[in-house]
Image (cartoon, rainbow, N blue to C red):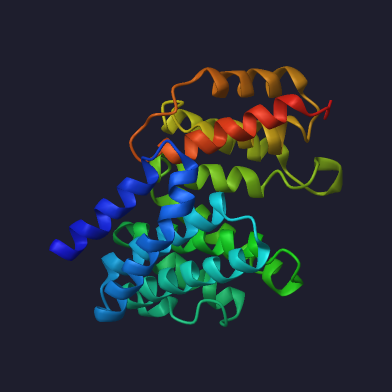
Length: 258
């Protein structure tokens, strides 16, 4: 229990930090400590999920070097996959099984598996983004989408709408004329904002970037970003993300997209 409290405290310290540079310079020590704890207790799901979340958060928001991002997101995905495999045997070898078998295995999981499913989906999404130069990695997007959809089918507001946020991004990659479904993505973004009581500023930034820019809605785009810039970023579990969101909103307002 003391080890679990330590892992939780490390995660909270990172996610509630207002200065991204402090996290960027200090997080590797936290990650090495978690690696050591996991090495000592390789079957501890709490530690595996904590490690997956922190590696994903660090690589996704604070690492620019592409080679490092690939390594870090791989570690995140491996930890999350191990945790879900231990929790639900049918999800072992999730990457290698045929998609129909994978989909059926996901459908067998229930609310008790939500944390592990969501963590793997987010870690896997980050891994795909880091490996976007690899068509084999991009082919896994359907598996991530399946897991995220299953999460919101079980609990629409899970993780304060973060699964909705990821689905919003995934479903606004193409305009409707090219087979995309931006309006479905828009509804996911609105749900993400609602379920976080408008406190997840990254949801608004991604709504502006992925949807408003796609449909050339400058009014919506500017309103969302101005709301982000005017908000207080401090929010338990979201402070670091919100601070990064404000930095992105500031950059987006300065470019000449429209």
